[in-house]
Length: 395
Image (tube, rainbow, N blue to C red):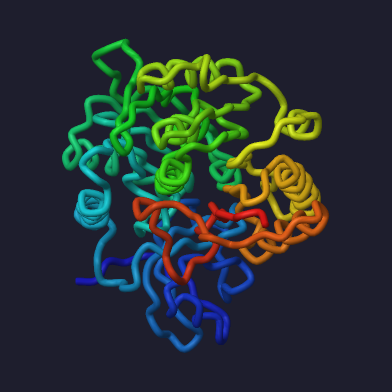
């Protein structure tokens, strides 16, 4: 017997993106929008000519009115429904994450078929975020399945994102399962050790999406003088030192993050006397610095949170990349990133090209950069591709 859910019908010819696998439907595509349906309710989606398109979460308060969770309509959305994608996500990470790494993105929202659910695993602890009304309505069920499948020793919830507030939800954070030890949480990534604060650190405590790019940094750092801008707790810095860099300078405005960076250097056998950690503003430092480097890493916070911010953010990305190029030796390398979702790959590339022209430099593209396979994105959902980066050589 098929489950019974409210039926929402799309306007004529609005089903093509859904048929190709895109998971979002906006209000303008819906023919019979019923605002009385409670946010987070599962609805059955049909085309104008009554073709069943699947099931999705409904929320009339959100710009994204329906988030698809299934391409069929014949399975009830219950514990068994959610157990399958969670088990699939866990098994996939076992295949793509190396044995010398115990920290990774376990569930990546739409990329794993669970819109609005982010779960990061740090050793035997989980940091979890429910960002949509739909996932919020299944919160207890999801937690039960995660405990059953993963058996974490601790779970911390960080449901405090901007996207959650756009869904009409209040922020919520706190321990759902407290750790037995008060010692700092130490993770292993590609054989290197890092201290992580999943309670008050940025994102869920560490920038897990940069793992493959940190490894590239290690591979190219031999004998180089490296500047790691926006260094946070020293991720790229430790990799650079491990790769044989003569010196890595870490630059970060947060004193607390810098204190952790020093501990991370020391726990991996490196000295902050040789690899200094500086508290300061990146823009000011680059503008006033007289020394040059062989490799500069630019991994700033998102300059554009929405499309309204793109023009201002573009100026910021241009200026910081221009200044970095002026501080690089001829033949020097630049690893530059943007995690601004509204900024497309094409736009980011254009900004970097303009920055090079403004700096009077020519650049070679050695490699495009992005997150690892533990951050899957649906091929039909380009909006899920937020982290973009380039490995460049200045000539």
